[in-house]
Amino acid sequence: MIGMGRRPRIHYPGAVYHAMAHGVAGQDIFHDDEDRVRFLGDLRRLVRESGASLLAYCLMGNHFHLAIQVGTVTLSSIMHRLLTGHAKAMNRRGDRTGHLFWSRHEAILCCDEKYLAGLIRYIHLNPVRAGLVTKAEDWPWSSLEGKPLPEDAAGNIDQFDPWPRVDAAQPTLIRPIRIDVPDIDEIGKDVSVRTGIQISEIRSGACRRPVVAAKRLLTREAVRYGHPLIDIARWLNSSPTTLTRYARSESENTGKPGTILAPSKGRR
Image 1 (tube, rainbow, N blue to C red):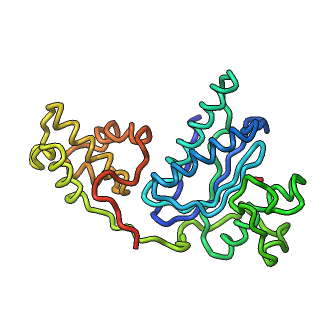
Image 2 (image 1 turned 30 degrees about the horizontal axis):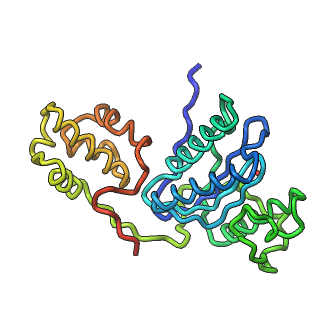
Image 3 (image 1 turned 135 degrees about the vertical axis):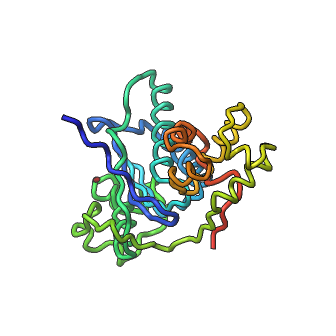
C-alpha cells in the first residue's frame, strides 16, 4: 500500500496563520529563560529576514503558539528554520541527540478578522488556562509584554475553537500587504546582469558551470516569488525535473524574500 503524502499548505503573500509546535511526548522545549531568549531572538530575526509580521506569540513549557502574517516566503520555510535551529541549539546545550519537536508544526489559515481577534486573545490567555499566572499580562513570554488584556478579550474564551475546519478554497486576506512580484523575464534580466551570462545562454541547453549557476540562481529566485516550476522550466527551455534539483537547496538559504528585485509593500 502506498501512503499518501502530506497535503501542501496554502501560501500567498499576506496570508495569516495560527502556528503551533510541541515537544515529543509532551517534553519541554524550553528548559530556562536562556532558551526562551535565544528562541525569541531567532524568531524575530527570521520574521524580519522573511518579510513576515509577528502578530502574537506565547511560549509555554512544551509548546508555543504564533499568529503570523507571511510575505513571499512560506510559513513552512520559516518554521523549518526556526524549529531546526532551536532543536540543534537544545541538543548542543543539553548534550543530547534525537528529535525535540513532535512531527511537523501545526498550522491553520486565518480566514476572517473575527477568528484572528479570538486567536490573539486565546494565545495570550494560554498561561492563564494552564494555571501559571492569574493575569495574562503577568506572563513574561508572550507578545502582550506586560500590557493588560482588553476587557472584551477575556470573555467566552472557552467557546473559542483554535483549530476550526475552514474552507480553504476561498481564503480571505487579513490586513493584506501588496507584493509587486516580478515576472520571470524581469528576474532573468537581473540574473543576467549579476552573473554576466547572456539571457540567450541562460535559456539555452548550455552546461558550462557559470551558465548552470545562473540557471540555478534564477530558479531559486523565481520559486521564492511564487512562480510554478513548470512556468520556470518553460522559460528556461528545460524540464521541471531538472529545475527541482536547482530548487532543492532553496530551504537551506537565508529565506529572505528576494535578493534581487526586492518586493515593495503597499493545540493547545
